[in-house]
Image 1 (tube, rainbow over the protein chains, first blue to last red):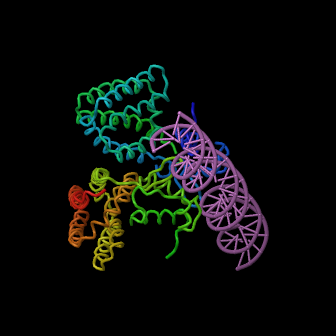
Image 2: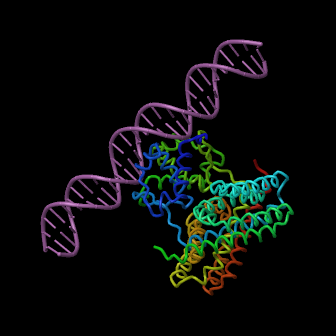
Image 3: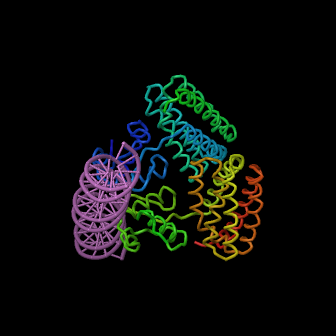
Length: 218
Length: 218
DNA sequence: CAACTGTATATTGGATCCAACTTTACGCTG
DNA sequence: CAGCGTAAAGTTGGATCCAATATACAGTTG
């Protein structure tokens, strides 16, 4: 497994992974000195990576007080899903009409990747290929600014996707829905694609709400 | 005029201003050494500021090749306005119903600030108060993630706003439209507010297209 | 005893220095 | 003379060092 080209990229990946896996808990301060030491790098690339995460909303920065892992409230979660709805609906509506043959092939390929990962019970691979699948659906719309925003929205909710995929019923449902989603894409039916994706998200957000709301923690 | 609390904030402001004013031209590489020297700081805070700008899409970064000022094509400009439409429509629809008295006061205040700046032919102040006016309209929606995205979209097109405001007719039109926009806000009519803002943007984008399209430069 | 102040310590912010990579210029070779 | 390879220069990436700010604590004073 080749290490990323630059150290700061490596640090960025590590921090993302650590936040995702809750090794770094929400609201936890990130001590630069110890964190740098842990990762085996100096503070400079660490600070640059933190700046990137700050811009994405993954960490909160206060001058002279350092960085803390961002806390995502239920309201935040719902807002993020609402924004995904606005942006992804736009892209999904346009993408199929603008897609070429290679785009369709890409979608099919990732569809199978998700199914394969699910069959092997590989959660990590399922999450990443699922992401590639969805982006392959939207990318053909040719809206790089939108894609950038959608990407950060996905990043902030990655932690919750792991929760969602823990349930076998949810996994099965996802796979079944992916099938019809891919069909709508290949049929060049943007409106239908947007509708199906909306449903897809709707279920996820409902399930997450049920998981997170009642415990009444904190 | 007090200098910002941290150097990197100062650098960030300076870079934003320089990019906005075209002192730094699109596609121009930013030499860290000379830029740091020019600003009278070291390269460390400069690099952190550049990371922030990279995340906002204002500069492009390629490892070991440095940062260049991002070029905004016409397609990019149109996409950014389309995204503003999606996001601002959402916020504008919700904001009036959720606004309190102090929110309305804020809107009125900024409305007058824009008019005052226009009366004094103060373009810079007009641009910044115009921005505060629009954000005051959207802020009450209570969607921080959306606001963050809208903010970066505004940042990327700030340079064009200066162009737009150069024309006295455009300025007059803006002031007139602001009046009715503020009235819709105070009437708690979200749908109408969204509609007026849409019109507002529509005119700007049409004017900009006319300005930028025919010259057939580059 | 509470509140305030001064001081010590921990942590972040910034500057300088060295290493790695990229690019360019130059000379060699065919 | 074209093309390639190589070396040198310039630029960025990263590490270490020092300064500035914030926090915690102890001592003092009302």
